[in-house]
Image 1 (cartoon, rainbow, N blue to C red):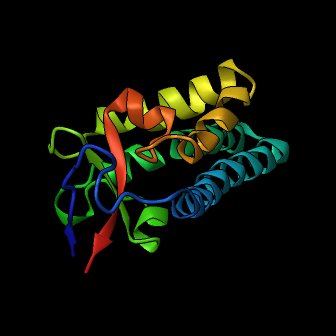
Image 2: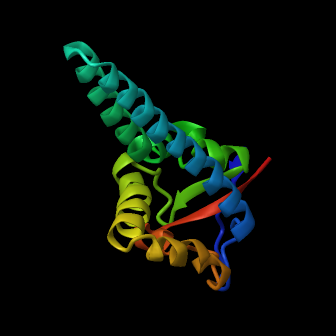
Length: 161
């Protein structure tokens, strides 16, 4: 698969539309949510069982679930080669996140885009209000970019086969 990221004055070629982006985001949200909920539920069960090792294991599972949910997208997007810029949801939708400068997506850029802007600021700081605005932004943007794309200087493009 190749990526066509040619840009004209009006709109980048092959930019993903809102529906494609949203579908991929929902798949990724389900995966991150599963990691979080599984870690918490399994951890709480172990803590409830009691005993030194069970409690320690339960706390570790809760922490692992939280870290899994936070790190899922940045780690997936930072992979090298043709999978760079793709999470499982984006891969299923045949989309990729690309940087405006053409460089690969790094772990730290993925953290900025996916955790700092979307999760931390978008959900924790604003109680989800910014998250809704960010998710709807591409509907009104000429380049189909969300706010987190503008902050990270990225865009989501369709893969051509």
